[in-house]
Length: 404
Image (cartoon, rainbow, N blue to C red; front, side, top):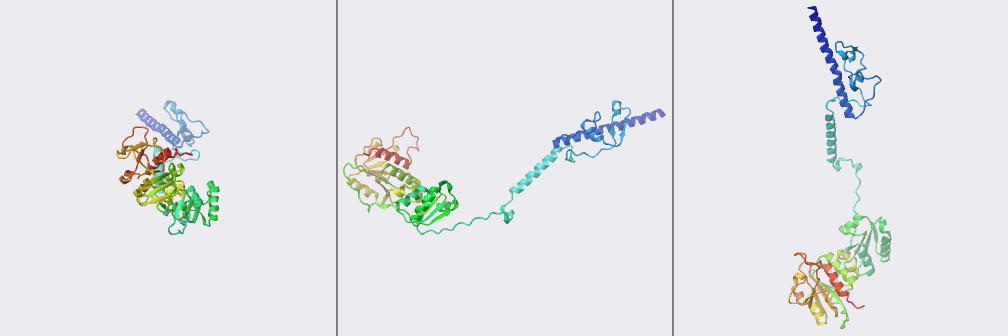
């Protein structure tokens, strides 16, 4: 009976010791999780780890009570801590409480950062203190002369000063424009010679004056420029064989097209430009900018009765030439290529509206029609050129015949 009692006590003691042996392995797995999360290597301990305890045995070796294990074979020489010590800090970092699932702490940090970022994004300007707000500059109040307009761009303003067709009121130059300093100084000197006040303003003020167009740092307040009356213009002395060419524009409405046409006419040597008063674009600052200032130099006339003007030119011996696209060829008026035209008398070249071209009344008064031969088979809808491009091609084919 005593032998049975002894065996039972030994069995219980062995079970209790086996449970104590599994505890360090559990602690070792916890500390490995902390080590992986913090990305730090554990400092080596003064004493070596007991066999079978891994890297975590160093922390348990500091326990004050050690019990030998009997009846467990090789495990009898192991040292078992009596109680679980508090976790040791690694290089100044204390392991977190939740050591089994370190990804939860990372997820919580990411969620907190996203929440803070969203809150900052939702902040309005009113949420900041008034001391941190930058004071907005007060807009400059500019008094304009009634009936004046604003020229903009270096070439239009410079040529306007040189031609003296307008009255000038104020010159506005961009302040701190170091890239074009000599040009700005020249503008200031010319304005001073004409008695025109000069204002150095910011780019925002110049943008407001020209309504956001490209001003190149220069704006000039001046009187508008109007076409001269064709009826009051002096008639040129025309003799047989004299090579003169007048360009007539019927209802050109786009200011960019009109400016480009005037620039080509001035460059290629057109003697006079005539526009129809009805449904035609006026001579605006936009036209002057598109023409690179040619509008300020070239004489532009207008007539309120284009058909009567063409009949008068025919009676004076001028040849009236119209323009038409290849798809608009008619049998009533002869049509030739611009390359076949021979310039041997004073000529009136007429170009029509951007959309529908010449009116029927004007076509009936033309002696011949010119076309620009295309370089390929054209698809429907793109069988014609822009009016400014067509003007340049036709004028070059005619004016290149001028006898020098």
